[in-house]
Length: 288
Image 1: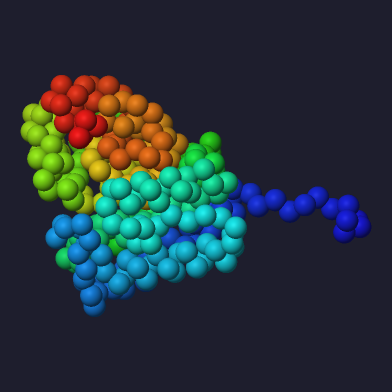
Image 2: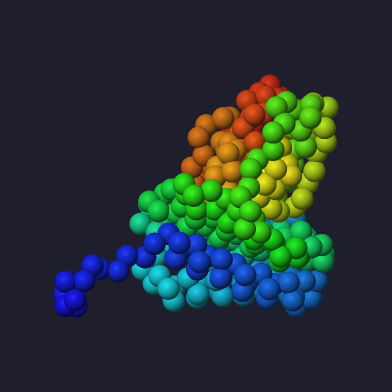
């Protein structure tokens, strides 16, 4: 066939996913080798919001690999964004309608990582015109790779994931996380725990929102809520849950979008019941 008559090459979503997996695996193995062995610890918004040179190095590694394959794509990474909610929102608003936007948290669970606790993950998502189409979360400590493509399901260890089947709070295992804002949102979150704990089987705090979302997707948790998260904490995990049959909204029950900061994610069956508990306790955080 004459070269001029050939169909133009179109990069498929599978290729996007392959790049995301490769980036997560390479960054994850490097991060694992540094567990508990960082050289410099910096404070971001507070003493509860940490960053190391490993976070920054992992993000540079991921960005370099992605840009090698897709130099025209946009990139939103935690460590290359200014500190605080306002800076994160502003950075997202600048790029969220890009044709293709990579959304990356190089180490979700930095506090765990700093203390040598092997509960952290690499989170990489790709959004097309504001809609997440690829989500990859990698747990280096357990060598668990969670992968989702829009419309094609979600998988761990190559096995398709499904959310849990609990149909009420009483039989549910729920997770949450503690906001870095210690003045307003932490007390609100503690009030939320006080409201939810008597209604559920138990509550866990894992310290990585991305891992918590992955665990909802694979049925290990019935649900998860947390206040004041960012797009890089959520995007990959949200797609995992949606592709596993679960449901994700903000804490008031409104549909998820990249700008959501107060998130509620469940197996779907308990979603309305858990959302109602948060609303009745006035702990959704959306009025703060």
